[in-house]
Image 1 (cartoon, rainbow, N blue to C red):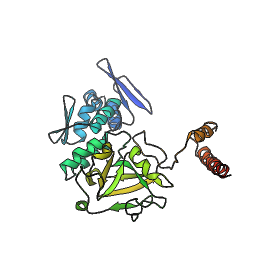
Image 2: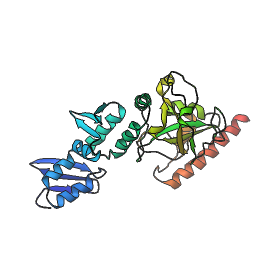
Image 3: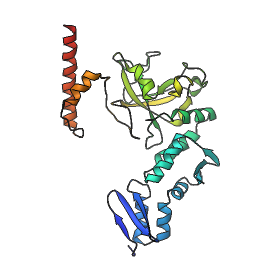
Image 4: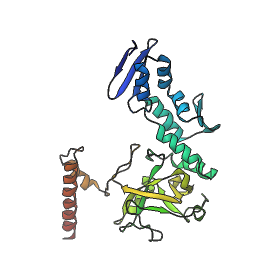
Length: 289
């Protein structure tokens, strides 16, 4: 390794150059490149790879540039939650390429107003970005997986729904109008009550048409989306989860807290859900007696 002090594990790489340590997570897109540079003792290449801001510029092939802690896309400065997430990922050595893909797709959206509005929408937490640069939102549907407005559109897992973009209302001042709707957890969960379902939908930023000003900009209108899963819980991580959950009250929580379950065991979780279902049925029967 050409006498460069280092420590390498499955989780991180640390090198010491000019008496200064540099650490990189194994999830960084530059991790393997850093290993290769370390093998040939290329200190200059290592310093560039550990400089995440330079890495960002190289990756984006000139479209994205960082100057004085500001991010620019083709010369236009960008702001907001997504930019903050990029800098946060850079500081922690986390792979930020999905966020770059998101920005590229968003900038391909033909509506400047929609681009600006979507940044505001994503200010709400728990809007994960997928590896392909799309993002995941929530949608409440009926018990038979149809939309509440028309009852015609099938929102079963795996369905992709689309309409002409010019059929979608692009006026943010109008709350309810034409177009497919999705939103934050707080917005969508109200539509999943009374036996309905809360679904996770994947949306390409290019397809977003408007973000209505009502509901604190927690919903959007889009011309296309794909239903990817039932929702188990609100997404707190920047990944998506693929299970289903029900609204529970304090009595339910007390029951669940009494159970001894390994949260990492699929068998234990299935057993818990099965027991919980029986518990709910018994509680319902007792209330009817």
